[in-house]
Image (cartoon, rainbow, N blue to C red; front, side, top):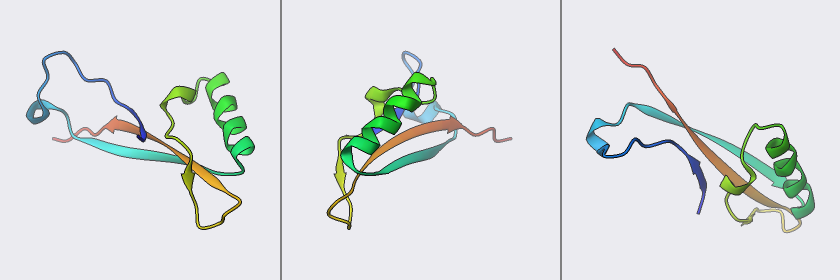
Length: 77
């Protein structure tokens, strides 16, 4: 599961949701390095450490990645 952050109001339906854009943050490196930067972002209140995906493989067998998806509301006329 990819970490996703978007607040839905109770009773909202997909048809009534505002337009939104997904922003993805990706951390790639050694498992220890990825966990370290995610922890640092958590301490700085940038991204919650629990909202990141599980470790995902990369083409480089010595690296892994984690993804965090954030949704921002787009104002449209």
